[in-house]
Image (cartoon, rainbow, N blue to C red; front, side, top):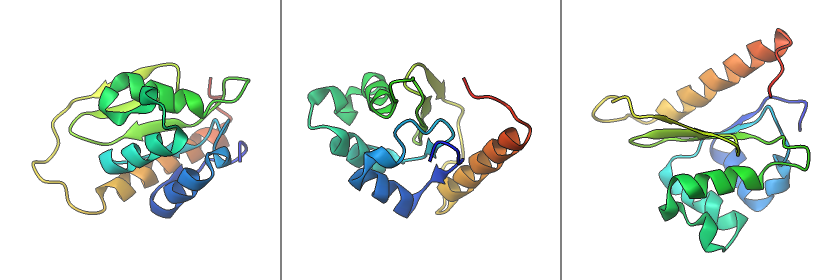
Length: 130
């Protein structure tokens, strides 16, 4: 999968829960879980308390790190919530900009589609992800 640029939502994340190896080492993949989905993802990777979603930033770094291969490549995780978090296993970025007061259904799908579009454009232009 490392040659593709998938952004996984819904059923794709469910497949990753069952087989994390699908995206392990996939530099161009992005997972976009909401808070409950992230909790299931963290739980599926390990019963270890280090991956307890309640541990916040430290847990997200550990979850993202668990997807990295021996060469250091792995997918990014965009955890949606009141404060959105973006992590690639080495660094964590936070977006605390206020959004709309009530999110409507489908906003996560729009986000995933936007990310996939930007990744596709980057790949066509030959940009290299570090």
